[in-house]
Image (cartoon, rainbow, N blue to C red; front, side, top):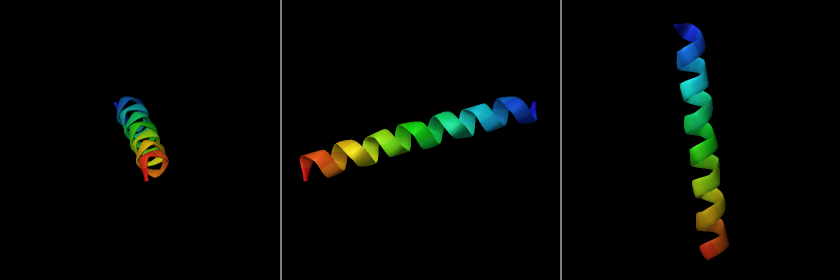
Length: 27
């Protein structure tokens, strides 16, 4: 169960990082 949570968190961080890169590219 912890493994699933860790994977979910990693995906969330990945999406957040990509979003930040897109915002930086726009600005």
